[in-house]
Image (tube, rainbow, N blue to C red):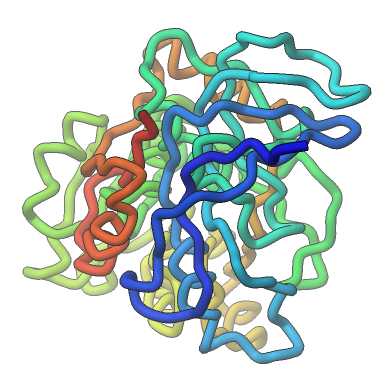
Length: 337
């Protein structure tokens, strides 16, 4: 029996964006509890380029298994093409979005014309947006949601023993968001405003009008002044940049406040305790149920997804090159004809 084929982006080796190949690949078959999705758009995320590079900075014992050839990508918006055995909740023709199999698999094979997805990872696409905007929501939206609103699962974090517990956000809360113009940042800003918080947005000056339009109460251009020098007594810092420099934000937070670095940083537990600040983080996980809640916020107009740029699937290399240049405003998305 002939194998049905599709176009996809595949890696046969690790490296720079030029290792991304646009080629034929077999259309996958949905297994038990899975849905086959005809992909219309794919959202790009940092794990896509980490996987493309072979995760050179991750110790071997912490690397998830990655087998070549690999189809990258986790974020999709598309239409249900067929259902595997026991795939409940969807019908052929339904428009859906999803963060696929993350972090169980680092990549969910989304850079393709078709992809299989666990039905539990999917939600119905918000009706108010097209597939390109919808594809920008899953990983970034769920990261913002699970850091700020509700974790929604009891899986242990690879980064800390204690489960991450978001603080309550309301009109008496001040939140500083570093990297506010990026995929996670611009959605986190809107979620914090939805909960009533006062938000200080940190980004480069080119993004000020964009972030004030999204609701930022105060803006700091980090190219002109350092937020840790001018801000004090905030309740929460969400550092979407994270890493070794995240510790500098401790001085901006009041006693009893919290610092959430999205990417693990270098901290001293004794210093945190002496300052009375909780430093905590988690790893985003797939959740169709939480995506459905985010979709309702999009349809209600409480949240919107901004697109930095879009590229056809065949131009995934150019999309990765755009990501490498940084200063992203919103999301980069691949469109699938």
